[in-house]
Length: 228
Length: 229
Image (cartoon, rainbow over all chains, first blue to last red; front, side, top):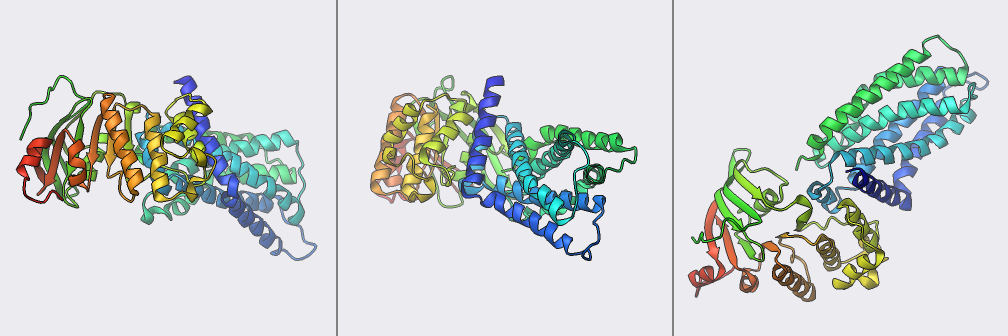
C-alpha cells in the first residue's frame, strides 16, 4: 500500500500539473480574476486614503476563494473528458488517492496564484508585511489546507452532472466562512501588525477546520466520486 | 438455453441479475457464466441494457437484485468501451505512463513503446492524443487495456467508429487474448461479422435474457433469418 500510494498519488498529481501548466488556461484565469479583484478594490478608496489591513486581508482571501473555485472546477473537469473518471473508478486505486492528489495539486496552483496576489495587495492596497516571512507562509499554508480539503471534496461533488456545475460556488462560500474569518483576522495581523490577543485562537480554528474537513473528505469522498 | 458451463471454473458469474433505473425495469433474471479462454458475445436492440449489464459486470454499478461473483482481482479487469479514458493534452506515451502508474505497474519506456508498436502507434508516441482520430484514440485505449494483461476483457462496442484496419486489429487482439486464457465479454452491433469468433451468445431482448447458450446453437436458431440485432 505504501509504495503504491506514492506511485499513484504522484501519477495523478504529475498528470494534472502537466495538463494545467502545459496550456496555462487552468491557472491564468484564476490569477487574472484575482488580480482584477485587487485592482478594482484599490479604486474604491480616494487617492491618498489608506486601505485598512483587515480590508486588504479580506481582498486577499476573497481572491484566493475565487481562484479555489476555478482551480477545482478545472481539476475535476479534466477527468470528465473521454470519461477518464470511469477509468479511475475501474482501477484498483483507493478513491481517496484522487481526493488527496487533487487537493495537493490544488494547493500548488493556489499558492502559485497567491504568489501573484500578494505583491498586488502590497502595491495596489499600500500594505507591507509586518511579521516574518515564515510565519506568514505558515499561516497561508494553514488556511490553504482547509480551503483545498473542502475544494477537493466539493469539486468532485459538482462534476459529472450539468445541473450540479454551479453547486461548487453556491455551497463552498458559506461553508468557508469560519476559515475565511480566521484567515482575514490573521492576515490583518500580518499586514497591520495589530495583535488582538486572539491570534492563536484563530489559528486553532483554521487547524480544526482543516482537520475536520480532511477527515470528512477521507470518509465521504469515495461515496461522492463513485456515483456513476 | 444451454447452462452446461462448468461452474467451478469461471472468472465471472451472474445469477438472477435484475436492474431498474428508478421504476423502469431494464432487464430481469440474467444468468451467465464467463469462463477463462471463452468469448461471450452480448447482443440486443438499442435500449436492451447491454451497456448497463457491462457496467454491472465491471462493478461500476451494483445490480438492483441478483448476484455478481468475480474470481479475479480488480486490477486484472480491462474495460474498453465507447469512451477511451484518454487525456487529450497528454502524448500517447504519457497516457500509457499515467495508466500504468495508476495500476501500480512499473513498466520501462521500452515496454510502453512496445505496447504502442503493437497497436501501430509507435510513430505517434510523442504526439498529443487530442490530435488523434477516433480510430487512433481507440488503438491507444487498446494499448492501455493490453498493458494490464487482463484475465477479463469487458468490451462495450469497442469497434464503433473504427476503420476496417483498426477493426481487424481489435479482432486479432480479442482472439489472441482468448487464446492466452483470458475471458472476453463483448457487446457487438455487428453480430453477423462477430458471431464466428464467439463461444457463447447472450441476447437481451424484451427486458429479459432472450437467449443464452452456445454460439453455434444461436446460429442454428437464426438460420435463414437476419442476424442483425
